[in-house]
Length: 205
Ligand SMILES: [Fe+2]
Image (cartoon, rainbow, N blue to C red; front, side, top):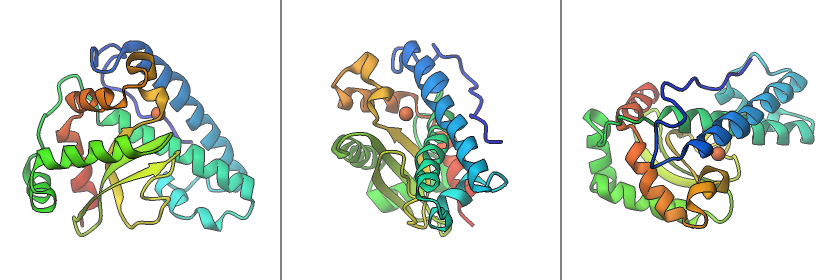
């Protein structure tokens, strides 16, 4: 049974950057419904005992196209939002540290450059989707964007996301309306880089 990540902060804790109503709706409705529908589709496909990563890596093995699409959209929605909500904090570590900090400087020149590039990708994603910072087992970093609920796992890039920027309108429209850029700037205020570093360390071998 796939379960939504439990939040260690209250729905109103990320104010004023992410508003309470958006948190209630986003986590309590959108993410809840992706999770329920992922569980249903995983059972239909007989893959409920696999991890979400395994399922998303092997969508081409699902014979029924409707079930495959349900797993891709709802499995992605489940996984992507678990990453998104778990990386946020009202008391975030504001800068990367340790091995991740070194790799960011080596790959992107500086932390500021990384944020600029992530914002560019997030703004450039036409319609609904995500921007990502991802890592592979060798510790290499990659930034990318995906439409809908796709991610670097379902896209078979060999990379696993360690930071997620949700640019579906449901993530920001109640507060920011059409100003996606303002939402991205403010989201950076509540991204906990300690958590992103933890995610990085779990992926590298
Ligand atoms: Fe979302």
